Length: 241
Image (cartoon, rainbow, N blue to C red; front, side, top):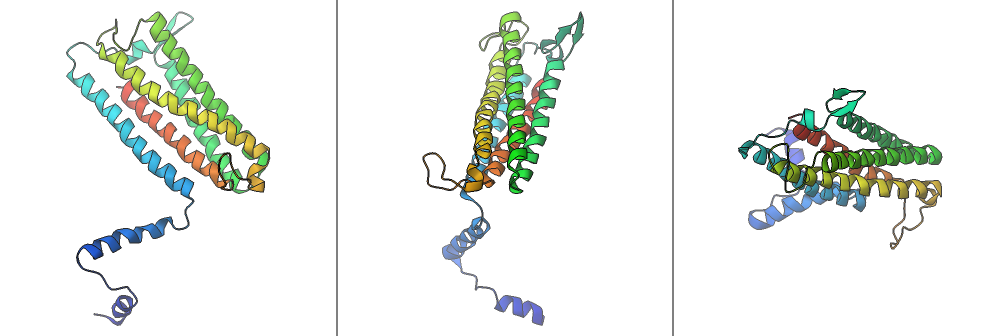
């Protein structure tokens, strides 16, 4: 053994055997979270659990689609728009995707300017992100209305093919739309907190004694980027397949 290796071994705590060693190894990982805000850690844990839920939904969709004996509706026809007598496939979905991805960019800029403590730019970027998210939800509501009213699709039936189509569509897009709607509400709240200077003064939040700071915007950004990323998978698996 070289002298450098011996010095490294000498400066390292002795390894424990058996169960105490396992406990010591696992508990050492808490060092990675020593200087991490609790809100960010909790958000990562929440997003991990949400990843499992969305994964189960998409796996269930794939299982149902491959196992049904009734023809599955063609997404290019189901989600097409008629504009000027032209049948344009997936136009609305493409616009929705563009809007949501754009909102991810404004959210990233809001986090950047938040850490610079640029109050007004951060406010406008958060407001833009919230408005883009609200636009996405509005277009999704239009999509649902078109399917329910014009096409007659229901969670328990579908005149265009496999009856499971309606159930899995409303479940997946509805669950994601709920996430976007909740995010929009919190984005508006966060934007006006920034505008009123609560982050600069580090005032305690509602029903909590913890101080508010611009780090909260990063936590909000984690949630929003996750929602955008999930939509990319929904778009690829549900609309393009």
